Amino acid sequence: MGKRIALAALLVLFCFTVGNIFAEGASEKKASSAGKQIVVGVSVGDLRLERWKRDMDLMVAQAESMGAKVYSNSADGDAKLQLSQIENMLTKGINVLVCIPVNGKVLAPAVEAAHRDGVKVIAYDRIIEDSDLDYYITFDMLGVGKLQATYLLKKVPKGRYYLLAGDKTDNNAKLFREGQMMVLQKYIDNGDVKVIGDQWAEGWLPEKAMKLTENVLTAVNNQLDAILASNDSTADGAIQALIEQGLAGKIPITGQDADIAACQRIVEGTQTMTVYKPLPRLAKAAIEFAVNIASGKEIKTNATYKNGFKDVPSVNLDIYAVDKTNMIDLVIKDGFHSYDDVYKNVPAKDRPPRP
Ligand code: BGC
Image (cartoon, rainbow, N blue to C red; front, side, top):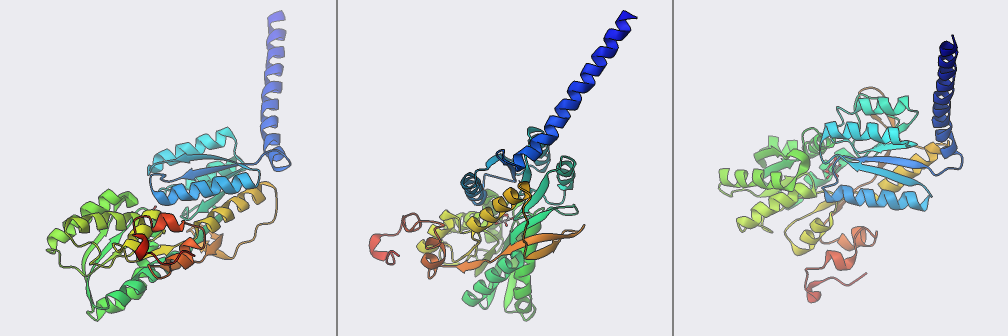
């Protein structure tokens, strides 16, 4: 009998303690939105690419300026790892999740897991498909492809084009291609543009892009007039292949992201253009959203995006085509890169005046 009472007492104590732990957990989240430091979880698809390092640094700085803290992880291109990293972050206790998916098709379970914990999810640059996603902060992705193709057509109105896209599992890679084709198709149909190669670089990695380009160059005996590369990391790989063949600077090639290395290549003449997507504005918007959500403030969006499940409230930011002629006005004056970094390898006498 005595044993039974002791057991019952233990049970009561156990329930009380567990109840308290849960109650504490729940009030933790509320407390953080009402005074405690806000924690934003940022799950980055792949920090190996310069583009995302830049985003990450900007987000951390923006969070600090708003008194919030960032927990971050890089999945290094591994979609499964990303899901478990997010689950981990949720157990650590974040207020809002900002996510750059490796593969937006398989990340709906992360949105569900976050929602179970009362955590809202903001997709950053890449959408999370077929999910009850809360917000999407992005650029005009079709517009990127259109800018690239329009620019290249001005340089090479007729000729042999090699199309070098990004990772097939990245929805954006498809949108860039779609945008490119909106402009290019008519010239392919009338025979002005002949597509002599069409490749997708796994993980957007320069080494993959380099290999693919080497193969294309061999297959066509170096006979090509233009490369429509979807971003700067693929352009990087393609340019390395062109260098091997003594063709760098002779074949116009596009890009995207205004990576520092790409901006240097542009002013040095081996890359023709890039698309500048003002990352400081994207990072700022994402963190402001996260902090406002955690503080229960009103959120304003300017677009919606269909993700297969719903029209996701979105923010769509503008993009810009950048080449040698407007590098200073668009990239340097915006504070994205410094004049000294961009013109690092250009002899002083050949540099444009410092702004
Ligand atoms: C982004 C690009 C980036 C690419 C590779 C895309 O989803 O929109 O800016 O270059 O991924 O990381």
